[in-house]
Length: 329
Image (cartoon, rainbow, N blue to C red; front, side):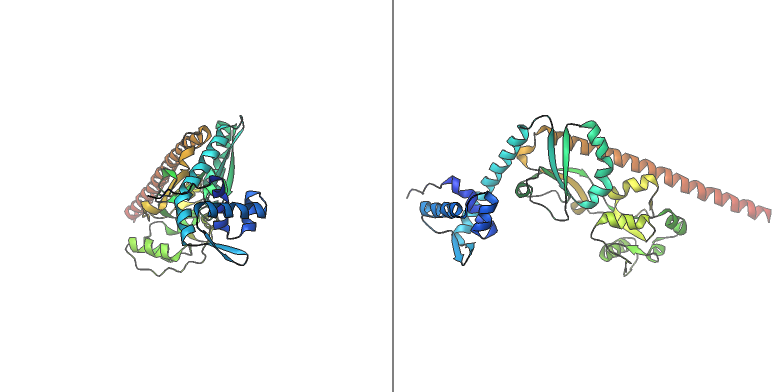
């Protein structure tokens, strides 16, 4: 069996960068090397392994079939090395440490930011740097320590912990609750709807109605949709967790008992590289997130029970008054 050539490991970061960016110049800028240094590393790699890994098309370079196979085989190892370096750097920090966290703008606005003071009070020596984005960012590539995500909890190469389920519920301002009291789901279809028509159709179908929803406004950000509902622009089909604080404060009211639930889609997770699993700042953040999620759900249940009791009492008093009037006649 012929002996395999020894791969020059120092050339692999340059190989990966050129493969991803498709130009030597861009790879050189990312790696803080000269153009000629990156070109030399690619030539050294190809000479050592005995075959070309790129096709040159003018100033652009593209992986050939052999290069694609090579990148696929080395990428997990390089990612693991990057995670290890990040973990070591985190452990080498001084007393003031920082966690770089990515999350959706709606989650940051509606849930995390109102609790930042509590985090700072509990962990004054651990700063949080928030990177909000609608995209699922690559933690390794973006230099991030962890993410708060929605989904099924499976992201290749990453560890994940389930934080909370969050079904979709119907919410609106208090005046809408007064207007709709005692009426069924059909009355909701007559209200100005906010959000995604497909989700509304699924909700009405689950409630036993065939409705072709026509929302008055749709939003790319759930936080903006909830703000619009608070301002009386319509009723929203929103994630319970994002609406929780407004429901507890009375800025929003739940308008129907039916939920639209899908455990594979609507759960919230904290996601991180396995190499950082035992990093103390991240351990502290994960523990705090679990505690605050649980506390948020307890407050929401208490507020819901109080609201339900209040509505039941009002209906009971209204029924008693009607009976008194009937006897008077």
